Image 1 (spheres, rainbow, N blue to C red):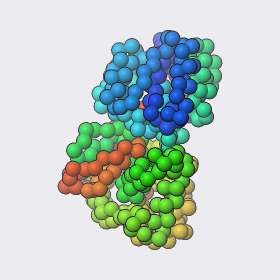
Image 2: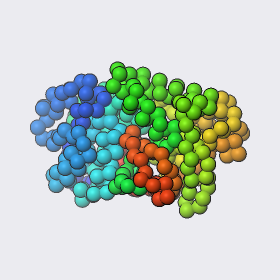
Image 3: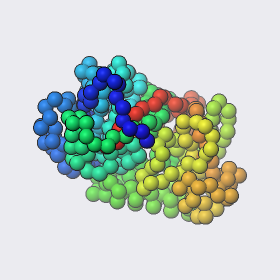
Image 4: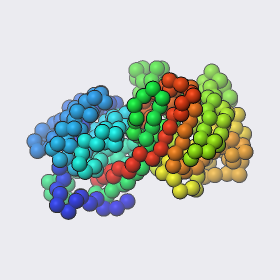
Length: 328
């Protein structure tokens, strides 16, 4: 990480987006608003839908905002990235500060500001006014996703097979039954890992996917897990990437009925390859520039679910650009 640097003739001009429906914001409504009331010079908007995000960012772009603070979950961050990279409302791309305002906060946990939102926001606003505080930059590539039947989306974590199944299970069975947040995530993770290890199709079913990496057919088989990310770490500090190639997209997949699961998964979850965690045994991880998936089942981008209209057209992922996050 490097010290934060703005353009030489710029001062921090902060805009704040808050989604009041996101997990933590819904639990503690009004907390950030009370703080922002002390700073009338800070532009702020509440957003609930992708359309709200688009409208707010167009306004922020007209007002020359150069620091964008997002208090929301992964889905809202995805909506922000989509507007920034697909619609380009800013003459100069703003730097982003992500507060952990959602339920899972996987993006915030990697590139965001850790800790309670109110304390983080006060540090940010104090830095804005006085320049005091330790601020560093983290740069990350962004995924560009095109699912047949949908517009282009930009985000940081894509999942298929057991990943998208797990997200749908969590939303349908746990999210609205007081098991949201980490308890529900833990229960979902344990349930699906048990299904994978026991090869229990009623818990986790395999998904047939044709995988084309960098324009070359690589795999055409059934998968239990498949994901692509530009994050360094996922929730619970998992780092299930062990590819060594030079590429902005981290691809990991586990074939249905992969061998030695109990022996291999604990190591691979931390990014440590083992002899038995090989492609021959059904474990894949590499860093790539472009991926095409021919898949009929639903996929997920930062927690949002999309179902391809056809498996004859590719669900494509490629490098969509780079963004700078600030941490304070």
